[in-house]
Length: 629
Image (tube, rainbow, N blue to C red):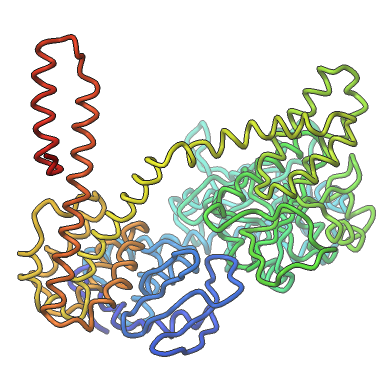
């Protein structure tokens, strides 16, 4: 057991024990090519090896989506977990003893979480037995049977019953757990009289497990007429976050991986019915709307990110479908476009990429997924999954089915407006025009009129990009400035960077790094370089400094990659390259300053005598800046 004196040392000791190739190869098949290893990036829909793993640098870098970092960052990212949780787990694995103060606090937290989880497990077991034994459990069994829930299903999901008594569970669990543990676990609450009572009473209990199978919370369904609310759910706690937890994931994750797809449903019993009837890849949120964290969690199990939304068929369900699809699209927006046309009948390139594929499973009107599966069976539901339309087709069909109700030109125009709102998201103009042709035919409106309205939107969307050449020049200039500043910083991370640290620092003018984020990087390099004498150690410590900042970690990975270009340069070549970058950067900065002065010059009022003096002063400054004669 190694004792660390600080949390930073804990991280350093962990990193010493993590081999980047070993870590990444647990999740990605790697193939050696030259000095590096290559594999399919797990952070986007990669169809050819785009991710490089460098054992010498200790980093990974995807050249398609840009994701990168060290071994610790990879574990955090691929497991979608908090840094602190991963660090604590690895410290225990590698036998690293935490600092006294931190160990005391984290030890207490870890112990409390463990007790809360154990209390929830015992509560689930207690409720499960009560469903079989309690005197008042008959009405619960009657309700469950009416929903087609068999004894096998009851056992699989550990369904239970909370008796209609104030403290049955409390009396049982207080023998083993302290009151604060039971309260924090959401199992008991204080009564008006100040005594502890059970949180759930006279309700069917649906235990909620995390992806590892731990019991962490409960959903409780009312059975009596007029009993409100219909569902009472555990509140968020130290072990339960409803925005990051999906009901049924523990029992569904293997099927999700095998099917390479997931069916997202609305409620507990939808999932119970689905999984019990052969639709094993079904999950649901726990009494809350779909969140980005839910989607990120699911993306760990389906590489293609094929997501089926199967909500109720009423207007509320349709709205939930729209909201859920927006969350999915926004979550994957940096990875590319959502699949926008159904190519099952078209021969396409095998490397065609989509950020995700969203389809909608919509059984006959009036039947929610649970009701449909119970009446028609799981196989019938699977047939609907096979023929499920893409999101865009589902949304269009919902608008077009209102055609019969649109009798006036105004009503038709309102429908067309809804259609345009859907079609505007299609990036491919040919596909978009084909949809327009189909919609125009169904609504019996002029195709060109729809295209014209879409054209207006397209013009608005593209106008900022083609406003004028000057804007593009500024953008390109800005990109060059950022790259040049990164070049200068990457020299410090090259093999000979630290050996020449003092000289390199003397070469750099004080204000040459102007990007705010890169200034943070430079200041951190200056701070660490005082006590570190090799590049590998500097890089490792920089990753530790930026451990919870994804943007800085990404920039650091870029710098490490860029530094390779300077490794083979001798001292003279290195100095010449640095000076060239500085000269070009200074010229860019001077051009910006001159442009600012020109703008001030133009804005001055020519009729004002005092303003004329300012014009002359500004003109002279511009000449000095640009060297104009």
